[in-house]
Amino acid sequence: MTKQPEVWLRGPIAGLSPLLQPVVHSIRQAQEEIHELMKDFPSEMLWEKPAGVACPAFHLQHIAGVMDRMASYAQSQILSEKQFDALKREGLRQEHLTTSILLENLDGQIEHFVRIVTQIDPSTLADFRPVGRAKLPSTVGGLLFHAAEHAQRHLGQLLVTVKMIGANKRP
Image 1 (cartoon, rainbow, N blue to C red):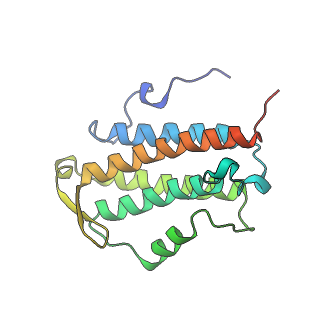
Image 2: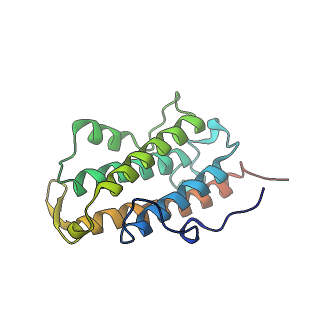
């Protein structure tokens, strides 16, 4: 199999404004790298916290959760009770969760987020959007960019955590 270039070097995404492509490129790159990193990762190690850092499960849940929350804010929605409940559960041991389930959940949230991004009118990127109960100021573009950079940040933390656990040793 020929190795592809990084997502941002694969060209434009059909139907997506060039102004929004960096957001989707960044998230798709994180998605690919997460799948490669978590391939064959033992589910029983999802809750390990080497040196007290956040567990791998937290990062997978948190990346998905941040995208969900930023998409809601970008659409001028307040968070639902379901979203608050999911936020409270990020990183809490849930024995029924497996690596496969967490990756499926992440992929589903990424697909949902990308659908929302493709529907955003680029002329609204500078529009104000209140964030959280305190209604802190952001913009549509700021929220979308935050979802992408936050996914990259947690990918980096996940990479280090998985390496510290040593569960992905390759021959």
